Length: 300
Image (tube, rainbow, N blue to C red; front, side):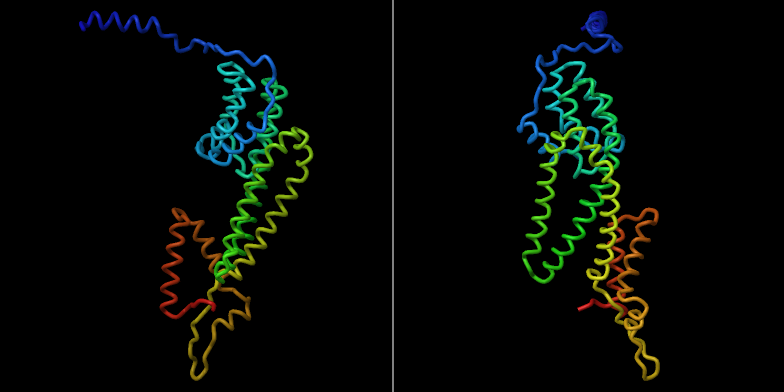
């Protein structure tokens, strides 16, 4: 093809292309009758939430794209395909969002109930709802399901497993299954309760968070004393007298060595360029060396 023909073809392509700043043309129409969510919709939202909610996580908007993906089929049914209302709500739901994975469908249930009833009119209310609830639910969800439940049930299951009891594995499976059932049921509950759930639960969230945090700290303290099974083995000789370092340490504070190990690891994780993987290797290496030197030993 000659340069002249190429130039003519290029000019023709430019003529057929829409200008970049031209407003988007929507070809869809909103539904003539308001859409009512069904049990199939709730199943779809729950499956997407449990399996894919975190797939689109990023540092800019965190769970924003995951939230949009979770309810996108329902938004299309409420607003219609290729409509300005759908476009506006998709932009709204793709914005920054970050909360607990275990409570996110409570916010989703309230949100979808508002949009089903008021549609695009609820846009600003939905934005305020998400911003107002994601913080409190993040604190409650992390305190209960990311710290408290794994600590309690994990400790019980681990102790049973150490004793050769297979019920330990069953207990952990039951705990995880109960959490999944809780996540599955809360969506429809929040949808039915709607905005009234916010005012009902708002004054309880802070108390629930504080109680869960306190219980979690209590359980961590108990785990330090029971799960870190290490003691001093070093017994220096002073003349004919053998000094038992462990007995002396117990007079100061029983299980003081496990406590010191926990504080040491906590301090270590606060250092620059330190992560949990490096901390684990450091603990293993130090434990092997001190054990080989006869300084520490395992509690039988």
